[in-house]
Length: 156
Image 1: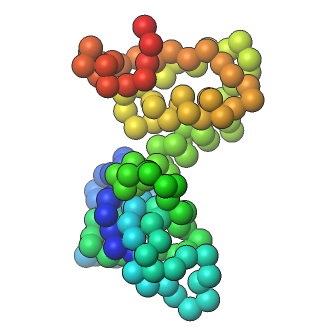
Image 2: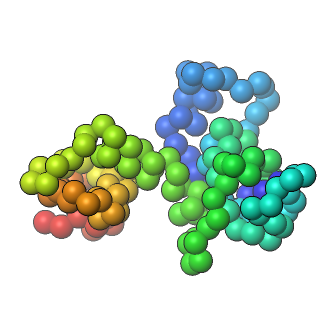
């Protein structure tokens, strides 16, 4: 059982609420597919986590509640110093960036990456994913307006 401290909100959550996603939870339900919080209890046989551990994980739905049951296999320990809000928004945004760059684009040295909507959730993830890559590439981002530009990590 997880005491929810923060819940990410992603495009699939919007689709689930509108019954437009590939699975439809039984009604009533709470949206919220990724969460961060503190474990309050663990199930029988769970050895990887204990009450008091800070974790982030994927729930499918139910994250916009005070407490939610999350399978141990869908939880990750939070690194020291990581805020709950960042942890709750980590899996989908960074996972999407990682999958797009590594598995789909298969970027090669010398190529240029253009990220449209670079100030959104997936945009910042592209830089950290790229920095961890053994195949660096040049990157460019497009953001809407000067204020968005200053909030991000993009260079002129």
